[in-house]
Image 1 (cartoon, one colour):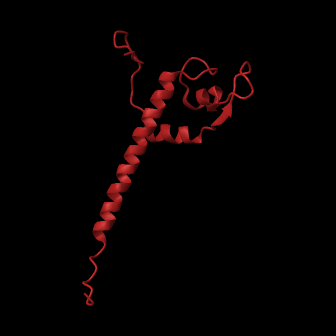
Image 2: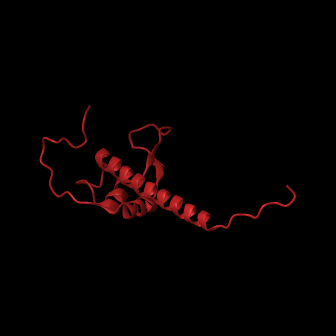
Image 3: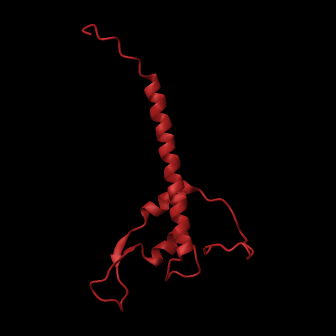
Length: 109
């Protein structure tokens, strides 16, 4: 199995990121279909432009490509933020549901 971040190499500059900020930035990116100039007209890819990606996240050393390790990491962080949002909403719904008074018994039964 290959690792996107080999542990035998030193890693510097580690730090936490705000998943909700990453999610908002990702949501604001324009996603379109495109093709490389050397590819046939019928072939299409889907995704943000590398220049837009680089401007939004500042990752990698160039604005001509999106590194897979960065794309995967952005996806993971965004999924984590969405998971937290869903959990928060589920707790909110449970609390609101608990505040609803029980319906009185139906006299027709």
